[in-house]
Length: 240
Image (cartoon, rainbow, N blue to C red; front, side, top):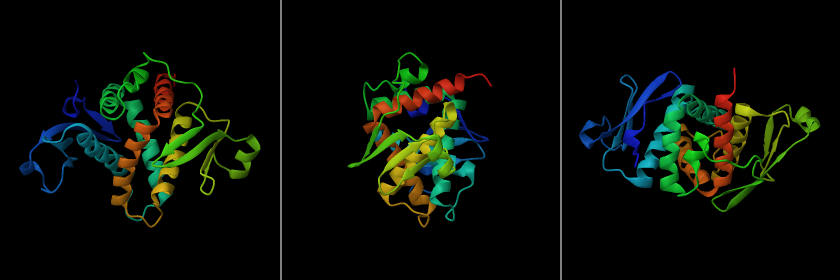
């Protein structure tokens, strides 16, 4: 049974990282449960953490590392925080295939046993080809559908999230990695809308809420997550 400490090293932007167990005395800030030494490429995760709680703190580190690589700060807009995480997750999954496959095995075990996340990413299990039309999040729901070429021209965007209707529309031109990035981007808008995160929200609350929100999304929308993993997997295998 793979643990977070047994995951392969992984790269986030230019940073090579590896998770190691740590005790309280090893942390610069003794209040933390996870801490990154960027110079040494070491992610210290408290050795006493187990199961879902350990995964939660690792997701906080991963989300934080992605935003660190993007250079976001307290002045960053909701749009910037959304784009940073969506592009970062696709980048990490595409560039660290074995790490991501094993991480999905842990995610499956802790959040949704039997969901098949690791096997879908490894290509040994099929995922639905159609994008799920409904996503749920903490009592709320969002519909997903394809827009028209005319709507895409009018919006001047590949996709858009309609806040009042909680609806995501996608350009019919989207495919491969761009589709994975853009749809996750819009899904994050939905999560931020539900959590009332705005341009005035500081970076730390954004990071913590995004980590928690991403885990909830994965746990309660297995059809969507399998579809997303398959799209990212196939885009990584596509010829340049």
